[in-house]
Image (tube, one colour):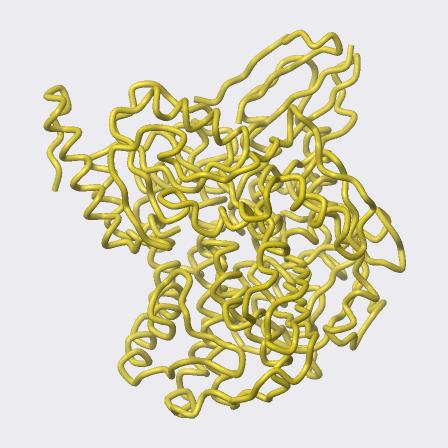
Length: 162
Length: 474
């Protein structure tokens, strides 16, 4: 959402970069040959783990984006409770009005990791952007810096960064 | 041979989900399900933490509507303190909520569903997003971006930042509207009105060209729940709970928010992290109900502001009684943006908003309380138990989007039955199913108080587990 707060500058961004994967676009599988990825959110379930590894394999420069990705932040607040089962039991069994079923459908509902971790504990990260959330101005600066870095380390990218 | 299609992830929504579609031997859809794949555990990990942290902490449930949680949490805190907040503080909270409604609904219409409505449901997936919209129709895209920005600026001018402002607290708010801020917002209003009028034209045009869409996009009878007030005008911040049926008849009314447990029950299924709120007297799943823009419009007699009332009359003339097609959420959202702009204009003229006496001070006076507010997506409940020191002992949250879970499931099944046929899946077919979910503008991070990210692959699998067909969106 903070990324979308770039507002009119999104038009400028579209001039210097192709957005090939994002929650607001319909591409369903992470593509190959990505130059820059800004990754938000902590690694909390098995789907995230699979995806983040695919991101690392297919991307040149990975930026850990926002406090959840950088430190785990609020997402990791379930860690002191020990493991996923404790929290799931409380929320789905013990809380008022429950019928006693735990969500479990291995192919569909991804199993929770026992410990939520920041992105750099799952893959090597090239750069970090703090903030809960980072504000649009900070995102813009980081985008410009990272896209420029991608361009200078790959001469085949001919578009210059404004 | 029965088959299961999995749409993974559902894109252009807030949060993470998958959809499964079940086909029988003849390739007809027998069922479809909507699975939310995120979970964080706010209701548990907030235990032991001070009441005063809750507005800021629960804001982190969501990046689109943190203001909803900020306000519902603050109201719960108000009740635990047992204070009546200064009148100016309530007006200011209302102003921020209206700003939130404008930005969130603008996001839904332009950024999330706009690509379907403007570029087409079956348009090229690579372009079917806000960037594609910017290329194909830059004026409309810019209008939508700036309309969202307008709402975000109201939040920032009051609270210091656009996302997760630390501003509303138990007992009131931390700062007033300044004259500068007031003038700035006022100056931007004409442009905002123009953007929503453009949106009405686009939507009415779409409905005119695709009249059949309304009949299969989540078109079935349900109850509707939301906040109502004494004047029977559209309500967004405070009041009592009302439930109407699909014909617009009131079946429960004047329920105090603290009594929500007498009418709302929550069921659990093992195939999704999102629970199933339902109207308790009718049980699960018969007690299916919807919340949010469609419900709020169905619950009130008038919007309470002139331009929105005109739009409401036109909207109601198109169908009789309560409107039951979830496609009409898009229409209801625009009417709500319009009334929000009119109400913002009215509030800006009130000098009360500039005063600085904005907090009522007290200690812990009540050990249990419920705070309710209308988030953009529907009624939001925060329910806290605290100890004598104000530390959270127990917390329950009932989230707007969660209350639409039964309806969202029924919607994907209805659309899938209509559009998905046989053993060949097209991208456009699947996008239509997703568009059914987008009509609800769900906030899945909120609804499972979870964090996560959504990933989508479609596999056609036979009952032997063999992959018969694969569709990857890339």
